[in-house]
Length: 159
Ligand code: MG
Image (cartoon, rainbow, N blue to C red; front, side):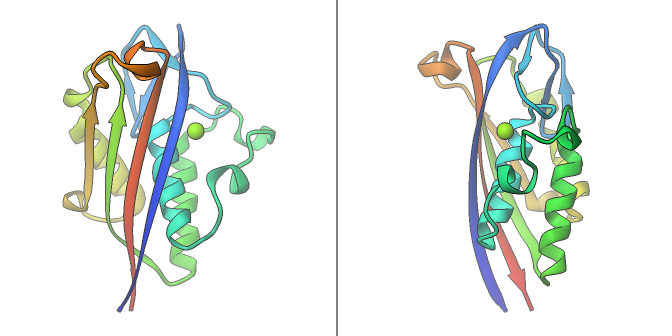
């Protein structure tokens, strides 16, 4: 068995009146992410971790934000396409561990739904997908509610 590890990190600016989608789940909030896609910062970090594990570049390379094809796109489509790229090369996802960094809103009520959504898109069981969230104690751009950040780590295996 061969293993590969990958990490990903992403940030999006928050703006009033936009929709907030994190981990594939729509979360009611007065602010949402400014982005070319739906701005799902958690899925973007996860895609970068998956691509990084196989040295396949990053999300911007495969899904450029200059392309009309990806304008307003549901990031779950990007995640499924990324997982397909990995599967084509004979690799499977062992597990993923993700951390959201945001001051507001509290995302704890949505974490289970995020795990269901992400595990379904990655075709793995829910116990292999962890989603955690932290505030940054009112410090920095996340603490000032100017943006949301996310990091992800994945492990891949190949028989
Ligand atoms: Mg992004």
